[in-house]
Amino acid sequence: FLAMSTPPRRRSRRLASASAAAPSPDTPPPARLLDLPTELLVRALSRCDPADIARVAAVSLLFHASLALEGIRLWAQERGFELPAQPEGESCAVRWLCFAALLCESNPPARVAAGEHHSVFIVGEGRLSS
Image (tube, rainbow, N blue to C red; front, side):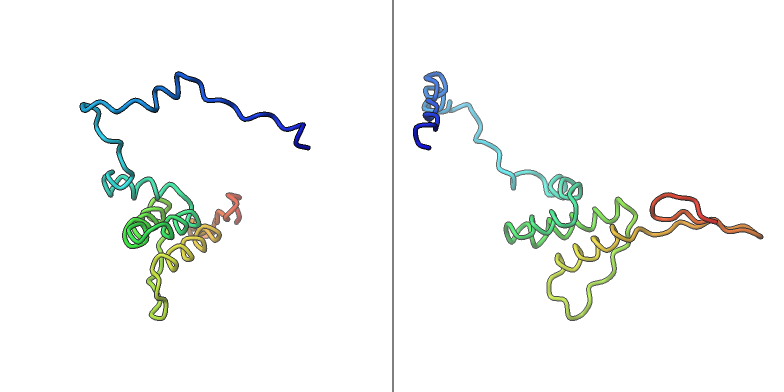
């Protein structure tokens, strides 16, 4: 088995010398994620599904306290879902909102149209039912 393994790759000299060079005094420091505007971070989070937003909330207290809450609310708003209020016994707003969002996503609201003599429904799969 050991004889079959490939030897580790060597770093090219060009890469090694570039990484060892000191940064120029004119070069700005690398941007950090938390240096981005909060609105941008919330908008980016709202593009994730509720389970991923819950994972982001577990990363740090900052993500949990504000970004995840606003991200899940924006996620629901963009999809036309109305999230229920947090129950009195539930201690974690992020957990509750992510759970409610997953329920909304798995049970989309039915659309209805009615006339004087007939009603038409569009079911969750997009089929017309009358």
